[in-house]
Length: 285
Image 1 (cartoon, rainbow, N blue to C red):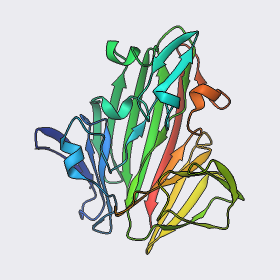
Image 2 (cartoon, helix red, strand yellow; image 1 turned 30 degrees about the horizontal axis):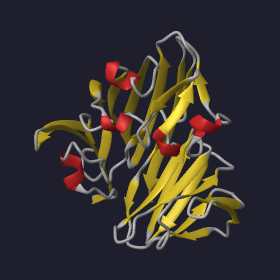
Image 3 (spheres, rainbow, N blue to C red; image 1 turned 90 degrees about the vertical axis):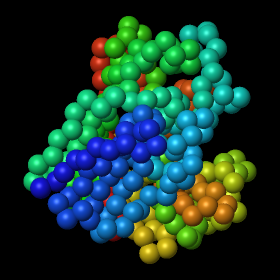
């Protein structure tokens, strides 16, 4: 029987979903951007987390699996134009810097899940002038983490999105082998498209690199870890990033490349009163 426990840590409400043996789990902090801060399999934590950044509301969290919505990545000077008006948007959007609401929890013999909600407000409309409801359902089944996503447009104007996820996996090595069937990758360090040979060394790279997925599953390997990622067809890109001196590697499913609100080539447009649904799953082998 799976179980769900809620507890408080440094004034934040936490929810932990786990299997009966306690060998697989996910831990969620809804107040801090709906973030997953822990994902364990075979009794071992797989995610990196800088707890100081988690408990300091003024900082962006370094670690866990931040939610990127309505955009993934950055915008030139943090600005974009829509319908002849100028707006400012933080890096990676708004979801990770606003609290989410828990709307449902459930556990039985096969799985456990928690559903959380992020809604538009006066505060979000200053940066993103759309009415929305975003629901994420985190499901733990055996050692697999499923993230089901619903992006609902409750307004009267078409709504542009290109969401993503930003998981930080524990890693000692920065040498990442990744199987996506991609032949090239784009290097944001020098803005060049380069041949992809199956491995990328992130050790001395300050900025990220991005590969276009040629199929709906990606396998990334570093140290003795093998991360298997499956995803809906919207997640066309895998972004790789790390930080010198920090023991993590980010393997990030994105739906478009950075700056897309300016390019507007690959936007997902959610029509009024409609919803866009998609999903990603992670499994550490």
